[in-house]
Image (cartoon, rainbow, N blue to C red; front, side):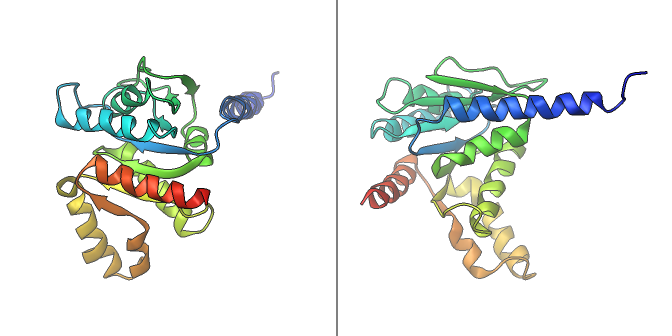
Length: 213
């Protein structure tokens, strides 16, 4: 009779192979900006155009741009970064819907496991930008905030674009989470909310320039 636990053992090897492959493919990166955002925005939307511009602004400065590699705002950022000096990188995930690798990736990695992919999002990050998005974007946002808050990674700028979109979340954090003393007032300083991708890029690029000196 076969050992019933053998499939679990093979899963560990698959996880290890994803980690090794991701680390090897991105080993040359000296820093990158990770951008999160919804797969559901169309090419005609203003959000998509903002995503393209963000990718352009960052990659034009030689900064590598990492997204989730899918459609929507991920595609937009990769599209803007693709013709620029900075690398356009997509960390794709196997999903039953929505996720199909966009064609604007200089480096394209594919993951089965979310937690391995999230590790790679953070490993080389010198900045995070959150564009409008759903559960996946929120998951990645709070992962970054938690890692910075608990000092598991060096502090880097976390910027949310779209004051109208993110205002409700900010108000809830202030009026409910902070009021209930589940976070400290200083935890609200771990992120910025801005209206445009130009402002977001300026915050990130200023941080990178200071870091280089």
